[in-house]
Length: 116
Image 1: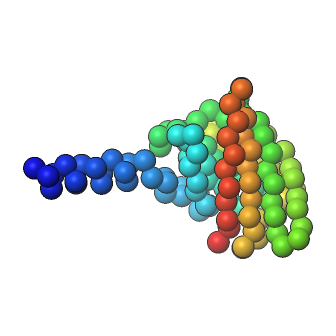
Image 2 (image 1 turned 45 degrees about the vertical axis):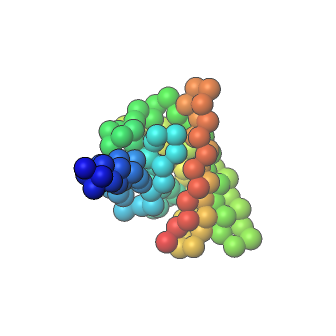
């Protein structure tokens, strides 16, 4: 009985872990949402999911800050259809650090990424 309780506890922990990358980016979780940061030809995309379901990004806004060495770039995050926000004019290089600040009404979420 103790063994089955331990197995149940392990399943519960993994159920709330970071979601897999669906778009080839880097995934982080915050405030029960999953955020996937993906490099695009003209900048970056941030995909938002709520428990593996696409979150409506039309009501979201924010900014993306990218730190590459001593260079810092800040660009707005704007809705781009579905669960996607986009940041134009930023470059996501390997080793860069990025911070997304996403606002949904009165709730603000900060998500940190390290690009691999």
